[in-house]
Length: 404
Image 1: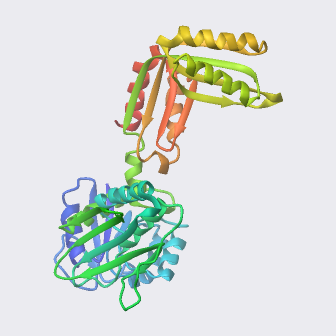
Image 2: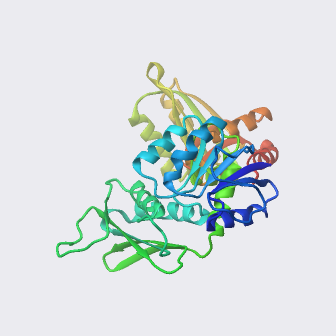
Image 3: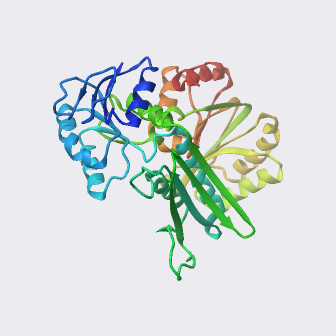
């Protein structure tokens, strides 16, 4: 059970948090902090210092200025924090960073799970569309919102730049007679009116086409749900700053498991370190229509290297002729061909942002005495070769380890 104190409990977000927390069996709001009295199913205190109730996490949905009041108390009590307030100044962000050396802090420019998916889409779009597309961001919020642009708009702008080689300069609104768009800028625009909870759109404008990625929130319960998920996630974590991306990627480190059976592994050792020779080998395999995968070059001791790669079992005869001819031409080369191999691939969008995934995969195999013969990796994928006889056990263990 995660015990939560809500700072700003009498406001609209406080009401939404209270309502959503009541629907979660593993979260209990034990107290609220607010100078305004309100009807809540828990005691309310004017300051965190005056609150005697023990808790695990403090969720702050108040004002940036309140940070200076509750931060020392939270540090003293060792409370994990969900810093959901937006509009922090540079000095206040520096204070949050200082707190993170002692406390676990969950912070996001937007507590919506959906907007964090949009972040990834925007980053990928920026990578693909490149320098030839102009980028503009428009954010819309209710008339009472105090800060502009929104923290979410800033977060999305940062995602655009993460996908680019050359960073764009942020331009906040445009007015006047000399506002021709300059190359290398990213426009961010704010609209305020009515009761809009939060709309954001990122547009990429190219020659004769435009792409817009948009997100709309129609209820504050979306923010409340994200903040409560954050509280559940941050409780018990070691000191540091954690984001919505950390929470999402921890749950999505491995989402896909594939088994490619009927493979064979070819290993050659003591090959002279001469790229012309290696190119010759790969060229001969290509001419024989042998598809190779999981290519690995290891070692460079004493001028020699080792090479391994996988092939389809159906190509063993053709591949064997090629590699044995290569071995004969270079007498020091040793050769091994193993059939009955399966390539297992574990993949997940969160893998590139989470450490320790490879350790979990390989330690799971080691504890089950499943030998691994070759490994290749990318940002979001680990592929490894094992005996086909071990596949059923390996698949069951990986599914259990990563809950897939």
